Length: 383
Ligand SMILES: Cc1ncc(COP(=O)(O)O)c(C=O)c1O
Image (tube, rainbow, N blue to C red; front, side):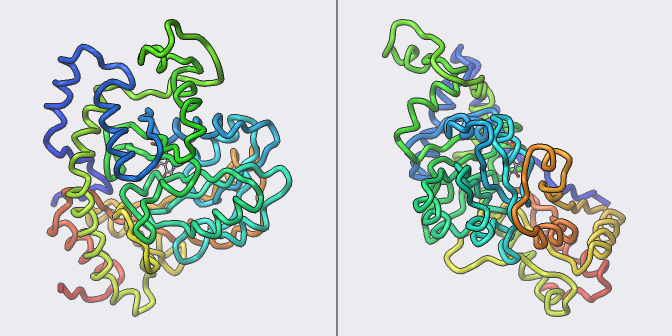
């Protein structure tokens, strides 16, 4: 029987052609013609002021930490339920990630916990749209205005999701995207920095080019380039950008395919939720999610681990997600915890993500649903 992987990166069909085009152009370093095309498409789609194509979401987060001008001891509020990079990028600048709990419905940062965590050292709030479901942006933006804080959206999961028809990635001063092979739109490793505050654009170009004004030199705006600021090599090769362009052109088809699997899971698991055996994701009104991931919460950690093991025995790879960052060795060393982390700890122990990829198709989706019903000893009704 075929193993169903948790993720299988899919080609949309145009990648080889565009890579050949990039190779033939004779210029395959960063910010080449494919990177520019990708950046323009993201700007059009999200409505950001500018987009810079980066080697990863992690790199884009590091750029935000430089652009935020963080000084050692400054505090950055982050959810404890997130990927390492959401905190690490800021710790690398000597700032202190302050971990706060998440909500028990969307699993996104809890605004009340954010409010309680604000001190005179707080400089920024980083929100993560978990699974491409929007955070509650209005009160977060209100808090940021009140306390003069920068808002950064870690939108690694969130392309192309929206909140009340406004694209995620357009709310914060800056936002970051991931094009890692596990993401909806991917090029193996890749990312983007979205800039919504026009005042940051010029400096972002410098930070991306090792702290130099090389971008202006390439545009013929200065006759030499020189070291001006902090920075690193935050550019993606145009070979990868050519791959990414092919993927971005197909974003609506890919998203529709992923949402079809997501919707079928959601419908096919409603009976198990009614029996109290699982809890399905919550999508509040006005939220259009990205179809990035489908998770279930089991009643206990044991039940979650048993389900993962039973599915594995049936050839299906389902996986857990983030361990609480606040209690990780790095989190304890570099960060500070604000308030209790009850929801994060509970969710981290009980969450399982189901296989979900573009091209997974109906038959595999039905097989996963049947296997979950079998593992939980209930009968499976196909719609
Ligand atoms: C919320 C979040 N932020 C950032 C990242 C890092 O993305 P990348 O691998 O593109 O650096 C991930 C990775 O999955 C993530 O889940």
